[in-house]
Amino acid sequence: MQIVGYETGASGDEPPALLVSDGDSLSRETLERGTELEYTLGERHCAGTFDGSTHIPCSRPDAPYCDVHTSTWVCARCTGTCLKDEMDCFEDHAIYLAAFAPTIFKVGVTREWRLETRLREQGADRAAHLATVKDGRIARQREAEIAETFTDRVRVPAKIRTLNRTVDGTAWQEAVSRFDPLETFEFDYGFELESAPVHETLASGTVLGTQGRVLVLERAGTAYATDMRDLVGYELEVGTTDRSLQASLGTF
Image (cartoon, rainbow, N blue to C red; front, side):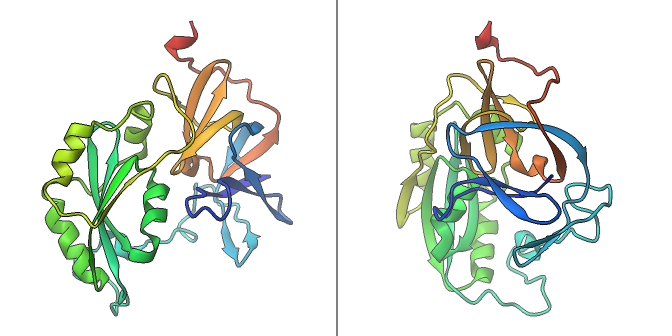
């Protein structure tokens, strides 16, 4: 079996899950709170690709994807000058400010109809819908202007380090006060941590929850946080891992 993808569950249609292929069929390893995962990570190689719901495997050693199966979304690099042969983002776009505890505030854009889903995909703690514009080019131009003050990128390890923290309300209000937001959001991912989780890549333990693409597991009294993208490409062996893991100080 190989982990070939993941779903954050951000849309609310399905719970978060790991996508697992056994070579003949594709299954969802649900990551609902309380689920017990009992897998050891084996060799890692390219996760291949999909043809509809059919997984097409790849044995190339690069992971999570080899050069053949790596795709680049040029819109992620756009600052208002289209990088495609022809601009095609002619629909309403939302410009937002997302908060990650305690004081990381990120500007971003997305198609307006999927604003809340996008915020949950990123694991935002709070957010403000700053404006809606008529197309992606204008949105990216506005984003680039705001990015002179607020970051436009937050790495997953930075989110993991403060997963037990809450947003600094005073700093957030000061940031939002620079704008006249259309609406604001506060998100609850269904779990709380007493201390920062240990950053590990594993698929063994009791699921405490997910926040964006971060999977939080509990083993022997320690909470571990795994970037689900870091699991993609691994072969799975049934049975909990026996490798030595760092424990949090709170377990002693």
